[in-house]
Length: 264
Ligand code: MHQ
Image (cartoon, rainbow, N blue to C red):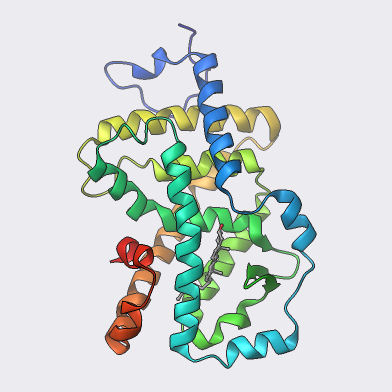
């Protein structure tokens, strides 16, 4: 097999398992992941660039703000649940994912799908005017006022801005999403070394992709440095949901089953 590219960030295990991967294998890993992303990313970049300047009017925003907290939560839960379905499809198409045991598939999806959504959000976020695509048009943070989760929404918009600043291509977004999904350190994994091997290959593919097209040498470490911020958002979202459930348990009962399954 071919030797390692010189600057692999990973420590080699005793079995030196990374040495078994040839450039052709890595290319194959890349292609599978990028294809899976493009097939499941909900909006093509063409569609997105056409939509960017389709912005909610003042009345649209006011009508969102006049919704009750319960209705707005319901609306967000429906959109998130819908987006999660695409992430599940993405995961299923990743080489190796369906070969993991069912427990581990569920663990990885439950732990990773909001992080993947946050990464995917950079595609649907316009940093020029701080807007995100919601309910058919772009709008700012004030759309979500009636949720009563200003800190959560502000944190999500902050992350959107910082990730957009990295100017990630669809290829890098695809590979980074896959790497985050295949995190071997998730609690309750039974075969984490299998997941570790899959993630190692994905990081090699990501590194190669960055070398190829981005002249930004430490892009990878910049992306990885956003992970704690994403984890904070996930925990904040769980806290908010728990609190909302205390106030309105019957409303949470009506949320889409997928949303409830992932977040409880
Ligand atoms: C995806 C498409 C997508 C779909 C839904 C739940 C809560 C209390 C607060 C979008 C979050 C409010 C989400 C709907 C708000 C920040 C949520 C509600 C990429 C991600 C994206 C655009 C979600 C982004 C975050 C949104 C707007 O492919």
